[in-house]
Amino acid sequence: SEHVSKKPKNRANYNVPGPAKGKMDAALLGWVEGATPGDIATGKKTSESKFAKAKSLPPSTFHEHVADYKESRAPLPSVPDRAAAAKAAAKRRRRGKPALISYEKQEFIIEVIVRADRANEGMTSLAIFDMIEVLCPELKHKQIRDAFKKLKRGKRNRGRL
Image 1 (cartoon, rainbow, N blue to C red):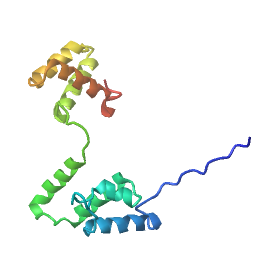
Image 2 (image 1 turned 180 degrees about the vertical axis):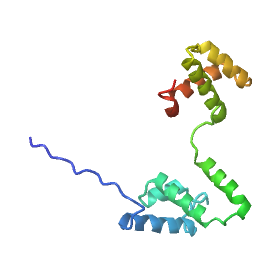
Image 3 (image 1 turned 60 degrees about the vertical axis):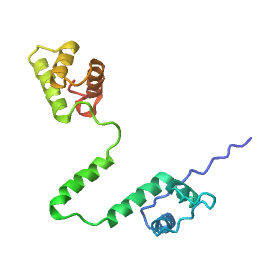
């Protein structure tokens, strides 16, 4: 039996001019213009995901293009509000749950641990948990322990802790 090699699957780039971009642009225009067919039985508008699948496009990529289109067409905020608008846009892009311990407190905790280690007065886990408890009294012991574990695993602290 002869081994037949499979042709590698090509990835479509929807941002570079070509057939894939033309397909995405046509679907995007169809969605934004409101020419989306609804379900006749229920009278509901077709979902973005179903529309993308009907046009043979990946739903997540189609959603990103729709969001970018809407954001680019949104009216510009007044000059004083631009900073707040940029901050709100950055906040929308974040993924996952918010940190239990603020970034500033995390930096302080790391500095205290590193300085104690440099002075050859290394801190035990219990001492670290007590310090975090003083800084964040609203957290329970398990939350403190989990937050410190996550802090240790973080990319910025790899070589430090």
